[in-house]
Length: 99
Image 1 (cartoon, rainbow, N blue to C red):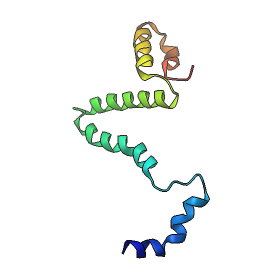
Image 2 (spheres, rainbow, N blue to C red):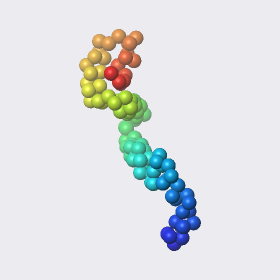
Image 3 (tube, rainbow, N blue to C red):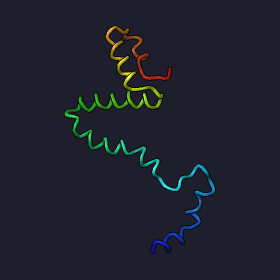
Image 4 (spheres, one colour):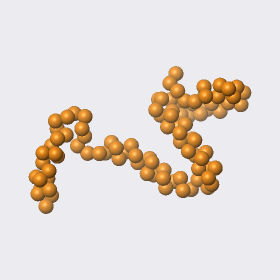
């Protein structure tokens, strides 16, 4: 049965060998979306709507750190140290960004 399935689709199955950008499986995509799937269940336990909003903001900040290759612990510590006396008009300067 499996051989029959493979033989019928052989031309399409071997397509990935003709282009180095194509992967033989979708593991990279599955690994990339796994945190979203796991998080979806965890988000049910935020406690309240406002708790879920705060969690979403934190996830956004940490995701921005990751995209910009910023150490999230260092960024958060620095931001929490500076924010009490930081001018509100310049608050966006505290967002994670490449240095």
